[in-house]
Image (cartoon, rainbow, N blue to C red; front, top):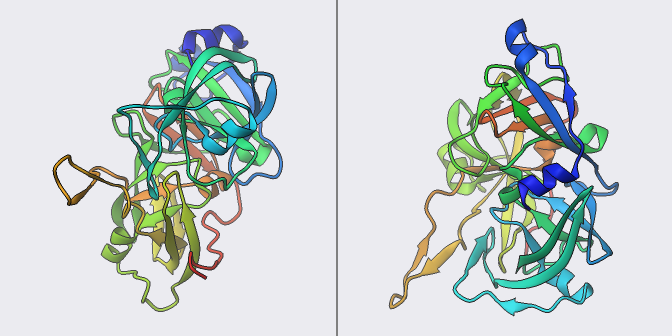
Length: 331
């Protein structure tokens, strides 16, 4: 979505910021671009929108590199799909068939986008009323606050706030971690005291550690107390078994969780491609060690400050990683 058009469509208001440096606080302006109420009945953050006048659900998916419309939704909305020649799309579960559609009008809140050529992907209809996944190509243009406890997501634009904490909702020290350079929301956490590179993925229901990193930390499917964690489904065709294991600690910023039960799975086993003329599949390099999902967002109030390359958060209560056992893919 065009950022200038979005800003023009939404009202901006100034918010006073809390900071020990009074001069910096007076200069800092945090302008609220939009506040979107979250739809009830969804574990992940879903807001209301419309395509060509038809109401849809929009999943706010920071883990998707590019916004897309689900293949199953195009049929329900009467959209004609075209082959996206030369384009390949991959995610958890491997490759997904890439197509595109022309959308006359897309609405979310007060923002409108006309004549959108949208990517079509997704092999599973696991959230039937979420037609669009709004991805990182949109969110990296703004600062975004996930306040799931109050059923809201807020978008901001900042000015002169480089040295000011943007966790305006608390007078206590908020947790803060730097976001790695690049467009995705990657941060470093620690599990059992060892560094783990994690991606904030609001489109994933539950946080998942890679199987290789779980093994590096001493936890495997054969470890005592490990139970089946259910079937992980992403944009690709394949489904992946997960397990839930007991770890010593999880730490991010100023927060430490003792004895968390965290899911782990071979997340990227099908994220491979084969070069022309070769029969040997090659894994994509540079995948995160962990996905921080909607369970993490439900346990925290989080502000992603792209303007500062920082993530602010405070604990909102409850269990951050609810390790509920579930059947495997073939059970």
